[in-house]
Image (cartoon, rainbow, N blue to C red):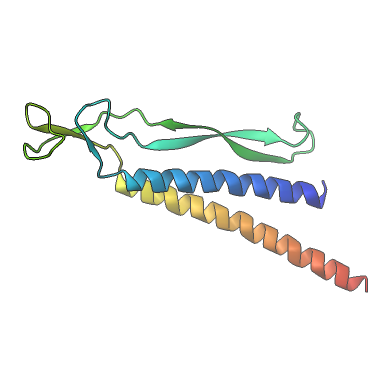
Length: 137
């Protein structure tokens, strides 16, 4: 395992967590969105991760994650009676997003903590590298 491998793994992990944070932010931004149709209602999205081994066989144990896809959660949209809303159907109903604020906050906290953990690892590695160079002087 080389230092470059560690930075590559950290970069990939940080990129995956950034996608997770951006997806959560998008979900929160659309939490109050309504639609005239059931199919048009906003569905929260989640990234799907896959494990990537550095040697494609996993022999050296060095692995990271990357985003394979971002998929909508399959949830039934809420229906509320708002006859004065411009998007209301002929019966006065609009379809609401299925975003759960609490769930999104947990997702955001977890992703940001994982991002911070990887960043701390990179910072520690840089400090150790600097100390090693200093010892050789």
